[in-house]
Image 1 (cartoon, protein in one colour):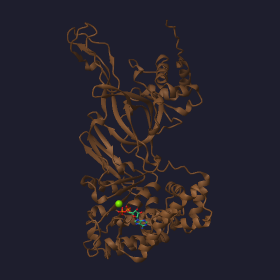
Image 2 (tube, helix red, strand yellow; image 1 turned 90 degrees about the horizontal axis):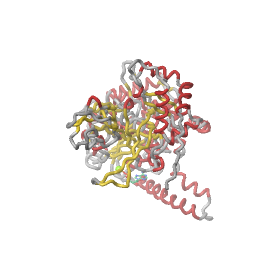
Image 3 (cartoon, protein in one colour; image 1 turned 90 degrees about the vertical axis):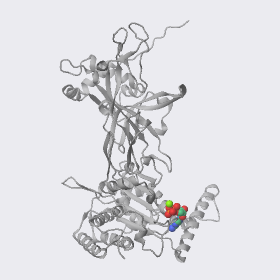
Image 4 (cartoon, rainbow, N blue to C red; image 1 turned 180 degrees about the horizontal axis):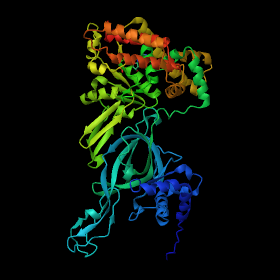
Length: 616
Ligand code: ADP
Ligand code: MG
């Protein structure tokens, strides 16, 4: 015997009507005027936060979106022109209080409303998708009722519902309804990953007026309903399901370093550090402390982390503020180690190797693959994903030819243009590039001029602000120091490990501190990140007269010295590089002016670099 079950359906149409009338009068009036050109009502979730409606939206979004739509249609909340009906209206929610990480999505979230934060890796072309199909029977010539179409498979009756014959049915195009559709793939943001983890991704189905809004590389929050589709393995239905997000709204995040939050307490520490006369040294020494020496490289990387100031000129041109650095060196000289460390230190750092990488390579590609179901897909490469951060590209000498030419635009204009088949797009790549490469023959030859051993075209080399040559010549004093340093690093690790299990009575605290001193950064990495973020947000130094004179004088001398056929040409680019580096130096001490102390410092570094590659 089956008992009659009464399901209690709470109908909140009335509640929503009251809410919309009270709080969305202006928006509804605007929609009424602009409909159907504008057809989405966006509700800030924070406005319903203290309402029981909020909880219901998160748990049963399908029902709630239906309720709101009913509220609008039944109560004629939109005053439309004659002949228009409001069935194209979309209800969108933004600013959810909580965001879910892609890797934390679980089965109990299916069919609930969630917000995902990350960076867009792929976007397809926008193409129409059928949402409601009408068929005509070839036998009786009558039309079927509209057949609603979901995501994925096309639903087609296999017999005519009117004459019940099993015949062919034709699609009646002008009775069908279509919607613009696009597919996106979002990837966890690099700054949320714990050392070495591979980012996970989620596919997103975007429709109607949300299509064509975003590009690969954009940082977004995507809100929507988590949906599942059953997997089919060689025609057999599987018990496993795939998930995707049915997009309800997209929020685009723009600001750099906004992921780094700075408290008042942090700010006090930052200010104290900025006043320290040794701040410059301390910062450089806090970069890759386990690597001995290479002080000039560390100073350059410090400058790179802070960066100069990007300028948008009145004529629409853009001058980059990002500092590009190249390390060319013998194998085993800690290039890769330094790159990895910088990526960890920089908010939004991405490490990639020139030779492997993904199909998207360093820049971006357009491909026609299974992701787009026959549509062209645009995929972001490392320099786009590192937008507003640092892209560390190892083994640069081994990168693909196409990447090499695309790099020219990426490094100077800080954008990447793709024009292929149906796709034309310009992606942003506002990142600083830290490259590492081996010399032409794998190792520097002492008897050949160094400039000739760097295996890159002058056009590319001239885009680097600083190029370091790192040779590995045996040198008793330095080798001894490195050996000690490496051994100490290892044994200190051992000491800490032992100490964690059993207190070592014979080893006193002071001893451990002394032993650790050379490998512990002066500034804690967390604080350094905050310091950098604070400087980039608030500090925009201007060249003093003295600094201007110093840079011009140096540049004139350089042009004179470097005339002739050198692998690294000295062009006006070098002067821009000098300005950027000097600005970065001023930023490192949070100064509002670039003074001669900054130009002195950076000219020393620049001169040491250029001496090896541009003149001798
Ligand atoms: P590269 O990329 O230049 O070929 P790696 O970064 O792979 O070299 O470095 C090789 C190893 O040698 C690393 O484990 C690194 O820590 C060590 N090493 C090289 N130079 C130094 C140094 N100056 N101080 C400490 N360790 C070093
Ligand atoms: Mg290496």
